[in-house]
Image 1 (cartoon, rainbow, N blue to C red):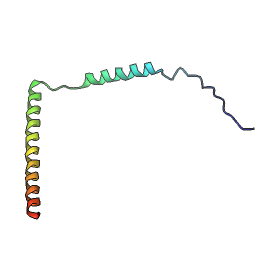
Image 2: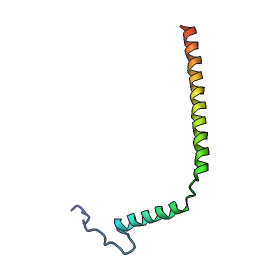
Image 3: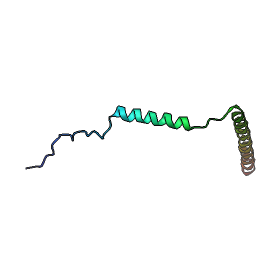
Image 4: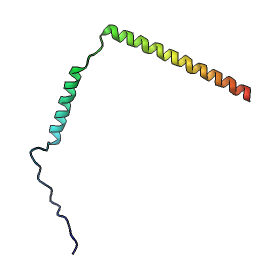
Amino acid sequence: MSSIKSSKKAPISKKEKSSKQVKDSLFKQIRDEMKKVRWPDKNEMFKYSIATIIFIIAFGLYFFGLDIIFAWIKEIID
């Protein structure tokens, strides 16, 4: 005879949480963590925005220069 496992599920203990309890707990933890975040004020945000724009322009010029150099090298080779 072959051994067949029973398809009965183990009873859910009180320690196991339902999916709603887990979801509520997760959202509570997210809310608690968001309260700890220190958000930048208007002056800091302005400084960070200017710094970001400057870096974008600098990297754009850098890669534009590389593109020009590689195009020039390719033109010499061809």
